[in-house]
Length: 110
Image (cartoon, rainbow, N blue to C red; front, side, top):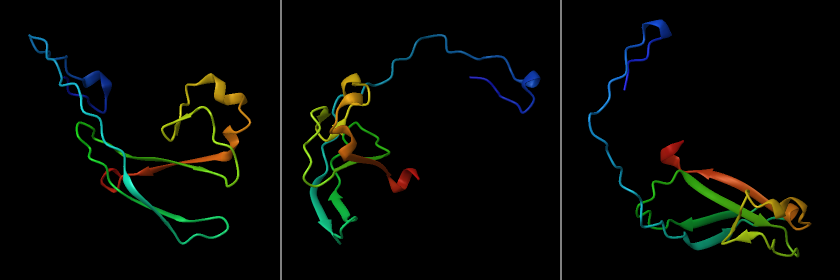
């Protein structure tokens, strides 16, 4: 830890603990949201609501929502409702474009 100043030439030296500290590792993942409900459907919009899952060891900041166009095939690269952005196979997948993704920020974290 050190004091950081607006003028970096005035910053303090670093202070360090004499022993190592081990942080607690999260071992119980959050449960999935439940009771998904759709209302106010129009040709291009709808309202999606759900009940929160149990956070357990997770401090979450929001929800990743993925919507697929009607009458399109499910993306084979999607797993458990999410599309792995690290998967190099999804860049050439013709179905990848039929998903719309949105990040919904948890109100407490906005």
